[in-house]
Image 1: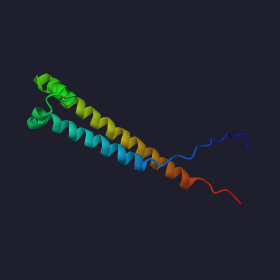
Image 2: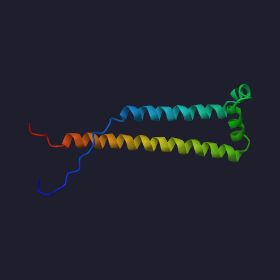
Image 3: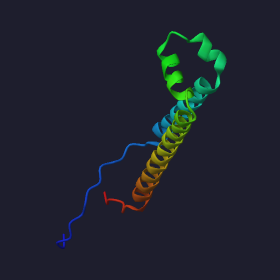
Image 4: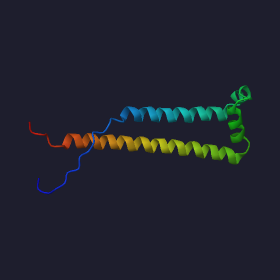
Length: 105
């Protein structure tokens, strides 16, 4: 070696399946939350549960509704950003693997 230090990278795991699952889970959570907020019949059916308490917090005032919508948007943006981060990491790892010099046998 000519004095240059080479950084050994651990072989990355493939996050594409994990990314898909996380994104679909966050999307499903967002849609269920929106359904709980907007569905008055469900609110009446769940009068004695924790869900009704959460709904009462979010449906009392316009400010609370705006907060809930903002919170849902922040969660959606965060999950989308995390998904993009994992996809970029996966892409960079596969590029490194392709461009790495082959070891002589």
